[in-house]
Image (tube, rainbow, N blue to C red; front, top):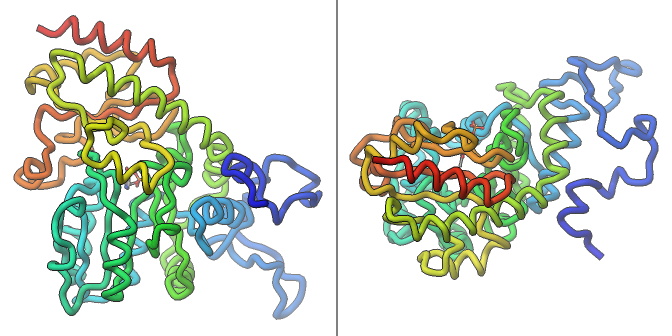
Length: 383
Ligand SMILES: *Cc1c(COP(=O)(O)O)cnc(C)c1O
């Protein structure tokens, strides 16, 4: 019988029962740059750590297993992962991209990829006609679902079908839900991206990124690219992410429980005019989420009645931290306009719904009552 997700976060079946590495329960950190060869033309399987390192190989096996991919690549950050992935395309290629992506991805596409003569069409993939945007030179569709920060939900299976019919790759940035709640490869995607900095690491202490694929050709291209460009994750950081993954399931459940409580509470607060959380039955993506995901996650976005109040909330929070990032055990509150999405042009931001009144919350694993208590106090202090 196939093992459950939580078990697989702790035990890779192929290494089980063996007592190599002295039986260490925690996978060792192989802090080595290079490896002695047993003889001429012979290898231990490891030659140089830019190509591969045992700690990184172990992490990649775990992440590939959790996403249902044939392979995974651990990179120094999420952006390093997306940057490397962009190298599989050629000048003149066209990519259809979700408009409401992580701001750093848009910055990469507009400032680096376009310079390399890639073309982009930005759509609201939850409702625009994707097929109508396909051209002769279109090579891929790049989505996030739910999107960052507006929490729009796209139907992965439906978009995968369009991609297959037209011979395009479907790339899904799955950072917001982690492999615990959503597995895009199983729904027809070809490539999954993760900012491992977020839920996989889970402790707001390590940067990491992943590319996971079930496509052999892409895997070979990526192996060559990583060897050539060299942005692989360092052994100690691999170990931190391996440790983070051990508790992925229980963290996701607790953070989601907090998000549901907060979303329902925020809805009733006079200073909050709208809550975007796909776990609320009135959210337009609720039914699709129920079909394609095992949960709704712990990211929620809301509108405050005025910009002044939004800024004041950021000033006044104490235990909840006003900080960029998400997916860690500590609750973070973000201002997309000046933080994550500062480099997205203002008119695009506004078109996507990111107004100066927009705040984004990543709930951690604190007691929900304490989070509500703090926000109640902050709201009461607003003038
Ligand atoms: C944070 C984030 C990234 C970038 O990851 P880094 O590890 O910060 O480089 C990419 N996509 C999404 C959805 C993110 O939230």
